[in-house]
Image: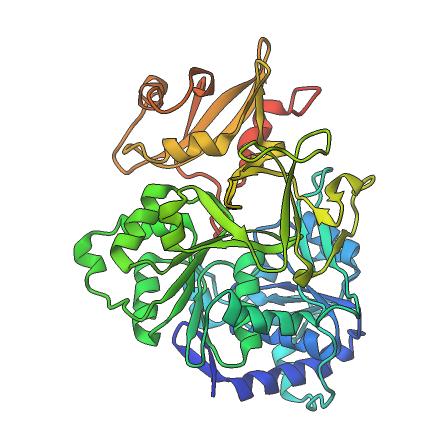
Length: 510
C-alpha cells in the first residue's frame, strides 16, 4: 500500500482516497462539477494533492495560487478563472484582507503543525463567519461514489503583458489520451520509477514542475510521496535518510545550499537510497552539477520545460558530461524548431526562438491574453519566447527568454551567459543580470548580487573577474548589492522586481 507523508506524518492511499471522496461531496455542494474550477491557496501539504484527486473525481480544473501573491492578484485570478470556490490554509487567510477577494466562496483548511512550524505562523485567529471549515464539513460528508472523470489538470497562471497573470488552459481533446494516464506513463518513462520507489518534493506545489512530478508519482499508483513544507538543507537530508527516498526534485539554489554545508554535516546522513534527481526552471551552473555528481553519483537529470507546453527535454549526468550546457534532446514523440525573426529555421548552432511540438501534453490557450497568440505558433509548434540553439546531434542549448535579452549598442546580450560565470565568483552567493536604460547604448548591463557571508565585492572586482571569460561588451556597467535576491522557493528569480525601478520613469520598456 503506497503512502503520502508530510515530513514524517503518514497517511495511506486508501485514507487519501477516502478524504478526497468526502471532499468531492462537499465541493459538489458549492457547484464544483465537470469543467468548473477550484482555486487552492495552500502551502505544501498532502491535502493539496487530496484536492487534486477531488478535481479528478469531479472533472474540474484547479488553480494552485502562489501564496506570496497579494490579495489584488488573487482576486484577479479568482475572477479570471471563474473559480467556484477558494480553499485556503487558515494562516494564509488570516494574512489577507479577505474582503478584497471578491464574491468567490471561501473554505478554510487547518494549517498542519509541521507547516506552521516551518513558517513560524501564529496560532489561529478569527475568520469571518462566512468562511466555513472544509475539515469540519468533511467530517459529516457522505462518500462520493462516482468514477473519476477525464483529468483536466492544473490551470496554471503565468505573468501577463499587462502585469496581471493569465491562465494557461489545457485543451481537453477527446481524441488524445487522458492526462492522468500520460502522467502515469511518465512516472516510468521520464522518472524511471518502479514499484517501491519514493518521491520527495520540497519545492512549492504551486509551481508547475514540482507539481507535475508529484502528480506523476500519484498517478503511478506505486510510488510513495513525501512532501516537506519548505526546503531546509539539513531537514532535506534527514527526510531522505528517514524515508529512504529514491527520487527528488531539486533546483540549483537548493544544490548550492547543500554544497555550502560543511562535509562534517553532510557526512552524517545516508543518502545512498537516491537514484534519480531532476532539476528544471533555472540555469544549472556546470561546476554545481559536477560537485553534486561527485558527491552523490550520476543520478542527476536536467529538464527544460514550460507551464504552457510541459516537460520538453531531459539529459542524464553522463550525457551532460559529453554535452556541457545542454538541457538534452526532445522527449520521444516531440520535435523542436529554432526560428529566426523571419520565421525561417536557423542553421545548426545558430541562436533563435525555440518552438516545440509535444503532443502528449496537448495544446493550450490563455484565459485573458491580449491580442493574438498566432506568433506563438508555427506548423503545430509553440513557443514561450525562450531562445536557444540545437547542435548537430539534436541537443538543445538554452540562451535566454527573448524578453530578458539585453540590446546594448545594437548587440544582443543574454543574461544567462553572464550569470553562469558570475555565480562562480567566490565572493558571490547569488546573482541576476538584467538591462537598465542607457541614453547612449539603449540598455546597460546591471548585475544584482548577493554576497557570500562575510564577503564584499566591487564593480571593478566583478569586471576583473569576468574579463577573461566574456567579451568586453558583456561586462556589467552597474552593480547592485542585495542582502537577499528575490527568489521563489522553487528557485525562480523575480527579475521583474529588480528591473522595474530602473524603467518606471521611462516611456519604453525594452
